[in-house]
Picture 1: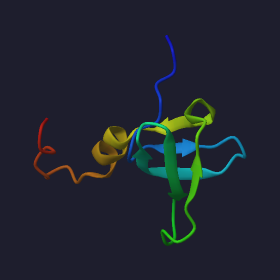
Picture 2 (picture 1 turned 180 degrees about the horizontal axis):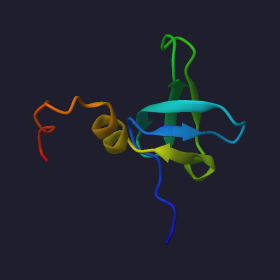
Picture 3 (picture 1 turned 90 degrees about the vertical axis):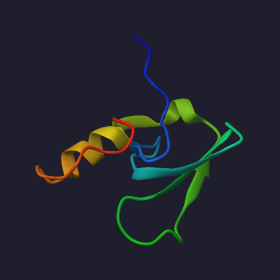
Picture 4 (picture 1 turned 90 degrees about the horizontal axis):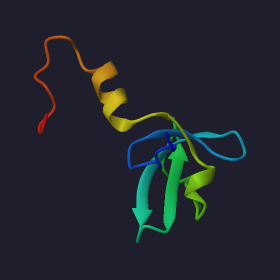
Length: 76
C-alpha cells in the first residue's frame, strides 16, 4: 500500500531526521513545518512531500490526547 502524504496537523520526520508538525500546505506544492515544541517562529518549508515520513496523523494524535470523558471530535 502506498504511503500517505502528510497532511496539516500530522507529526512527521523530515529528510534531515527532524520531527515536526505540518502547519500548512500552500497550493498543494509547499509543506510548511514547525518544531513539535516551541514557537512557530522557527518554521521551515519543503517542496518534496514524499520526503516526509508520517509518524502520527492529526486524527491519531487527537484521539490519543483526548480525555476519556470528552465528547468525540466534531465530524466523527
